[in-house]
Image 1 (cartoon, helix red, strand yellow):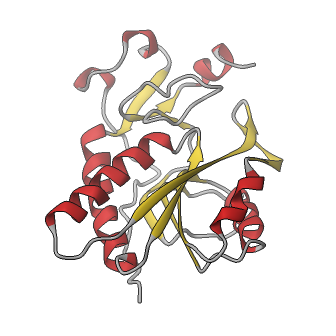
Image 2 (spheres, helix red, strand yellow; image 1 turned 90 degrees about the vertical axis):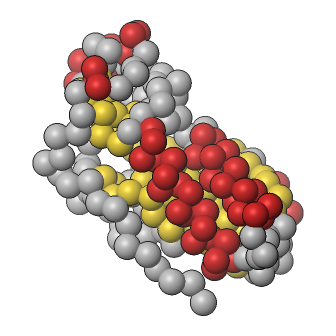
Amino acid sequence: MSVRMISPTIPDDEKGYELDVFCVPKHYEEDLDRVIIPHGLIMDRTERLARDIVRDMGTHHIVALCVLKGGYKFFADLLDYIKALNQNSDKSVPLTVDFIRLKSYCNDQSTNSVKVIGGDELSTLTGKNVLIVEDIVETGKTMETLLSLLSEYKPKMVKVVSLLVKRTPRSSGYRPDYIGFEVPDSFLVGYALDYNEYFRDLSHICILTEGAKEKYKV
């Protein structure tokens, strides 16, 4: 039986950190308001999430399903911590990986439609224990769409871990099983979170400036 953990909450009035406190790529210095979650804090929280997942699912073979593109960095780091636990504890979990891509954004707006890329491959998850790894849950509608699609293939178990959950009045009320941080309703980039494919190469999670939204708009 899983134990739901209380996730750290970044308050709406969180001032964060000035950019010059951390190493930020020079080409992004004018585009970022502030650092809201430093890379080291992300890694420490990810390690704890790995421990919780192994505790809850450690007796099952897990298929870790990465939601691309934004989830790839969190996915890789989370799996590294799970592998470390496998190697250094009496309890280990067999682990395989798969990938899917969802598209629900145009510029900084979440669209009403969700495009699933790679959905035909979900048939391989029938009867499996699935851990969906996502970077951020905002309205929750994208994840609900994926879970509905996945249910058609009858997996044995499905758990969802998301690094971030955004507090927004647009939320459907959906909550993942594991949450890294609850964050304000701001547009966040970094640690593979993008704005029109930019900022994936930023180590920290930062708040984007309004000027940058216009600069990188497509």
